[in-house]
Length: 422
Image (cartoon, one colour):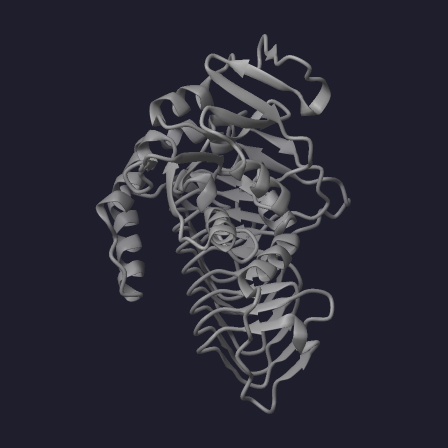
């Protein structure tokens, strides 16, 4: 089966700054990226490795191409799988779709062009033609030659940027079950490491732990291949340390945290998702936050995740170009890819930082910093594209990775269209 994960214009806007540089299904929440969860689920059910591609906005399509085959299953990229939803989607026949609350969940159709027209259709849910004998949430309607069924159960979806950290604990639990089913954990070889409830800890091959404290009483702890935990680190589950990632000496990692592949994290962290190859190696607190790829925090950087008056946090909305209520009391920093801050940076509650932002002024920077911003609290100017590309290339080369033409093309597009964020 060919899995194609699609973005909608609403999701692309709602999940910025993270969807500025990736598709929705490329977002990491829990242990895995969204599309990886589906691949793992389908592989467990069918015994066959799945092939995934993406149907996304034009400027991202070179890096995230769509590769339709003979049997195509289009899946909403925001959806996190569960057994009921997977069963319902697998059961779709060609020309059938699944919807919920006037949103397409999945569609089985041969033609990519036809699927794209349906996904973008503004008239899909207008004047629905109910199938004979159908009523209520389990009813059906037709649209052209297609037949759609309403999914009657609740779904888990990443529809807002804060959902990434808000749903992270539950997704760690779900991914843990998915990744460890029928497998045995590698043993620990360090007599000075203390693990509470070791039955809730899974260690992949190559993991190195020295004199750490791991508490899995309230949630599982997953340690990915070749990950490293240094001396005197304290970790509380649910927690995920992905492949090649590092927890530095004396770190205090609280529940609901994911450290993505090859990222390095120290200090105090709570309920935060780091994507790949980002560094917060020093002291300082980060809580209820999402940090993109290739980000770097100077020493003693801190984020506020609670307002002094305890009121709900507002975040910048890229679609409305305004700050809007999240309904959350705890919300910290949303930082896009390739953004960096200097030592002693202080982020206010509910700060949104775009792509390729370089923050170095003392004091609190603005609560919204658009992409390619240079400065901070005292002055803000443009981060010139060639300097931004040079810094990105240098950072990636230090990890032995190539800064591809597709990556450069995405950043150039965002630079040329940066005024659209304001």
